[in-house]
Each structure stands twice: as structure tokens, then as C-alpha cells.
Amino acid sequence: MEDIMIELKKNVSEKRYIHILGVIDSADELAEKFSVSKERARLAAIFHDYAKGMSKKNMLEFSKANKLDFDDIEYGNKELMHGKIARHIAQNNYNVNDNDVLNAIEFHTTGRKKMSELEKLICLADYIEKNRDYPGVDKIRNLVDIDYNLALYTAFNGTIIHLIDENKIVHTRTVEARNYLLSILN
Ligand code: DGI
Ligand code: FE
Ligand code: FE
Ligand code: FE
Image (cartoon, rainbow, N blue to C red; front, side, top):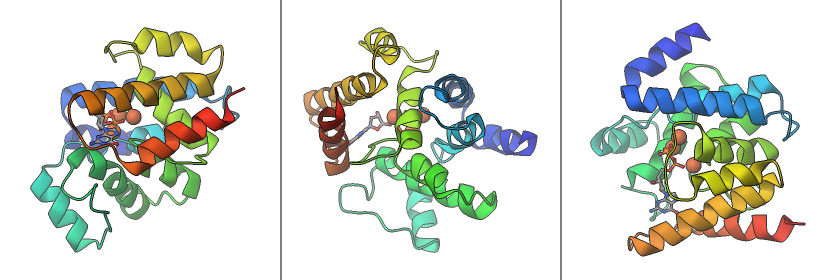
């Protein structure tokens, strides 16, 4: 585990590394609530932004060399490519073979319909870790103890509203994740 953290630190900026440490802590804290083991939660958190420091050019070259498939919305969008690249690195360079952990890494940005408890946990940890500071973050933090699905639903709504406001493309998976969470709310 120490080796992973050293390699990770070399691959991302100082700010990103601090964010990842925050996500690891949040994942650890959320594990019990989501009935997921702390080990698996922490493992997914460690790798989720591993590829975040890559340039777009490197991402495209890496994807070609490793035959990674991206849909039209993802292709060329760094934000929508870094999860799948991180999944590939975790699996191939670090022998992570837990499919749920790998899915949590791949889908941490958009979520998806019928996402697993671990997938939800990583998305939420990413939104609320202690170094995050954006309008609405405290509202999401406060909702976690009331209903973690409502907290994540609220977080996705915020992202979608933000993307629309910025005239950015909303991935279909992001919309599906939001609709799925709405469908399972009490
Ligand atoms: O990598 P992080 O900054 O920790 O967080 P993230 O991977 O959850 O999100 C990265 C960025 O991706 C964030 O600025 C929001 C953006 N994003 C999330 N969903 C979508 C999206 N961007 C587009 N264009 N479409 C989406 O559906
Ligand atoms: Fe990310
Ligand atoms: Fe996220
Ligand atoms: Fe992140």
C-alpha cells in the first residue's frame, strides 16, 4: 500500500494528492454506512483520480495503445476519460481484480444507473471530502447522515445544474445516475 501511495504522489499534483487523501478518509468513514469493507472503499479511493494528472494527448495515446473504448461524449474530454484510464492502471499495474472496486474507479465521475453501494460511496466521498469547497457542499455533507442516497442525488443535481449553466455536455450516464437515485429514494 505504501508503494502505491508513492507512485500515486509522483503522478498527480500536490493539490490532487491532498484531495485523494481526503477521499480516502471520507471513504473510510462512509464504509460502515454503505455496508462496504473499509479496505475495498479505501482501495477504490486511492485509485479513483490516478490518471487525473495526464495531459489530453497522453490520455488519447494511452487509450489507443491499450485499446480503451470511449463513446463520442467521453472521447477527448479529460474529465470523462480519467476514470476508465485509472481503472486500467489499477487492474494492469497494481493487480486490482475486484470488479466492484474497478467499477467504482471507472464510474466515479458520472455514476450510472443501478450503481453498487461501493460505486455510490466513492462518488459521494469524492463530493464531500474535507478539502472540497463549492456552493452546496455543506448541504450535501449534512444530508449524509439523514439519507446517503438523498445526499448523492442532491450532489448529482448540483453537477447537472452546473454543467448546464456552463453550457457543457451532460453525459447520459450522469442523467441516468441521477434518475436512478431519485427512483430509490424513500
Ligand atoms: O476528478 P474530480 O475533480 O475529483 O471529480 P470528478 O471526477 O467527479 O469530476 C470531474 C469533473 O467532471 C467535474 O468538473 C465535473 C465533470 N463532470 C461530471 N459529470 C460530467 C462532467 N463533465 C461533463 N462534461 N459531463 C458530465 O456528465
Ligand atoms: Fe475524478
Ligand atoms: Fe465525483
Ligand atoms: Fe476525485
